[in-house]
Image (tube, one colour):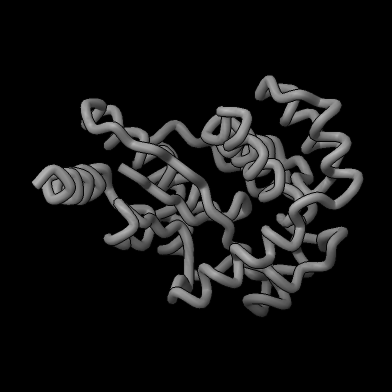
Length: 212
């Protein structure tokens, strides 16, 4: 059963959603699921070199860009329950995520897409690394066991950039307005970092219908 995950590696709730989905998938390990991460850019107009994070937050949200405290409180509480160590103070730059999405795309072919997504989240949200920097992306590919020579070549010649932009445009065209979003069996849409119990119910319903 196909499960498409529409996310962006600079989205903190996408990290929470990934962890919650993994809990649900462990609870339903008997359901054969084909996972694929799909493109959505929260900041499609971000300069290719990225931007100072404080300046980006000021432009996007106004003021200090921290947003309502209840939202941040909920995010940190969810993170603690899932073992995520958000360390926003270490993030100096907000990157353009086109290259990160390219790496995620190639990781699917290499059979390590969830691992690469996990490393991207950790490197950005916990370690504060610039995941728009190609040297960082190469190191992530190395950590995931990908072929560095191939990834170096693909990054250097801008392979698949138009495909990434096209997939982002497609997500918006079908009505995706935020992430994370999940398309189950090419039919059902879940939006937001849902609790594992809701993921389980949705997977069970979709699988039962597919079997029928």
